[in-house]
Length: 119
Image (cartoon, rainbow, N blue to C red):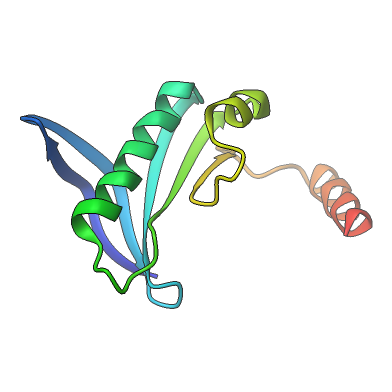
């Protein structure tokens, strides 16, 4: 991953929008746009990120590059909101919940055991 820009300004119809973080993945040959949200995820956040991805795909990326990927990190995510906001075949927009602290050792071990059992 190569860092491209922080608070990348894009202008659409005389309005300015700012993408929180822009990276370029050399292996995937695509831009990776990251949006950071302090609160809970909303359908508006996903729509905003979709607009950014569409803009990069139509105005910034080269024809030889792959479609941009959008990642939205938020402190509270409801899977149902994501499922109904994004198309079923979505492969470019991802939403994930983050934590502002590391879990306790017992919680971490429990999560790791569950992850290993599920795979």
